[in-house]
Length: 237
Ligand SMILES: Nc1ncnc2c1ncn2[C@@H]1O[C@H](COP(=O)(O)OP(=O)(O)OP(=O)(O)O)[C@@H](O)[C@H]1O
Ligand SMILES: Cc1cn([C@H]2C[C@H](O)[C@@H](COP(=O)(O)O)O2)c(=O)[nH]c1=O
Image (cartoon, rainbow, N blue to C red):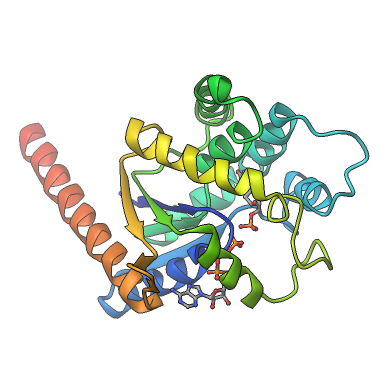
């Protein structure tokens, strides 16, 4: 059975880097893994609409619920792509997944409405759209200060020429995103969660150090899954 792993975090936390390094670390152990990054900007109509929205070019005002639907549509359109990846690989690593949708949209409404909106989005994606649940999620926790430095290292994006997109430019949103990741990880929504610190004290950890912490958890989860499969095969025999 394929393991679905989600790597989550604020903009510029180093998720794409961690996802690639984890995939390579698994490959070195003979475990086949693939990285799928959401949004899939150029691949789905939802992804295209999100690119327009983040570039500030969507033709109508996008409320938090409308944004949630666009992001969820991107994943709905990707269901068969994900299921093909699951047939071809032992591990599918998502660079952002459903929790990004829950956290970012919840960060645009008053704190008292955040949990209700998060659970609405989770129901929409899992129950209504039939998107695959992650088996384990990692939150790459980083301060806004470090994230700004990493964002500055990012190359040109496909959907905007600006240095910062609509979410990245919004400092208040970036702070609320950190509070809401804290809320989901503590409440276990869209989990189970492991929190991975991007920095140790006031020094950013190396990409390989971060990836090896995540890889160790993934290997442990693969072992647990194999034990579980063996147990259920034995009890059926
Ligand atoms: N731990 C790290 N130490 C130093 N540089 C890093 C680290 N992690 C990532 N980087 C660099 O920071 C930049 C942004 O990283 P990355 O694209 O992985 O972030 P991200 O979280 O996926 O960003 P976003 O969500 O905004 O797309 C890249 O140039 C990457 O090489
Ligand atoms: C998948 C997903 C993403 N977002 C947000 C998070 C970012 O601010 C942007 C785009 O992500 P990228 O990593 O910078 O390409 O969109 C979201 O709100 N909901 C989602 O489902």
